[in-house]
Image (cartoon, rainbow, N blue to C red; front, side):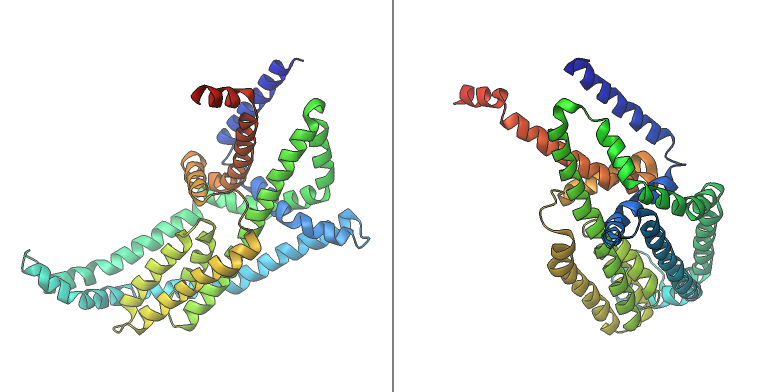
Length: 355
């Protein structure tokens, strides 16, 4: 096979693979999650292997420990989340009245220019606050009990642990099989790029996973301690969304300040909530990200945001899961392509021509 035909072979294969991912993305969620968990846990399995344990035994220990921690965390946190959510929904009418009362000076200024009846606004808010709360609860309930969501949840519970176990156990076999398929003439160059891809993924995905975990714990505990209603939920959501640069902090700050304005009549709670998120942002930027993620992973925040939005547009939640690995791979390949171009005669001739 000539070089040109070989190139077309890989391009067509990549195109077919992308089509398969696009059309089957609704059923691939447990497999992708299992692959990501296996990638995260593989270094720990290797560490136990160095102690003399077999690959199967180390895989059983690490996989069981990981999912045991996940299950225990869900058992502990889920009742707390449910309690906070029910209490929050119950207080929505009260929050609406407090928020409108706090904004009354602004409404009075508005009434000088527009015809707005404050008493009527209070009446409308009390009438529709309960309706809005019921509507929100119904939407969440429908999302959780919908057929596709229910199937995905069941498949995640049943299939993901099995996928994680078998991938971890046979990780070396899979990597060797893939390595055997690589073109022998360009084996060294491809291996170098694969090493760069692995370093980028390890630096970002594994590091960012730890950053999100630490921030989730920090925000959840801090917001609960300062007395914010729904503080546990706001904290966890803020930490989870921290894998998108600045998004977790922005979402948490807006939600936290909004709830604190409706919850309390003074500004003390607002100040404490703001202080928590400023502290979390400083913790992330000065300690967590430099230590756990590193500064030379080659993934610019704009590139990360673009990849996540593209993944969401094409494949929804599944697209978000694969967006960062694809972005890391694309970033390495783009840098390699630019490097080859700068060393080629095409670049030299262009430079000579311009000069």
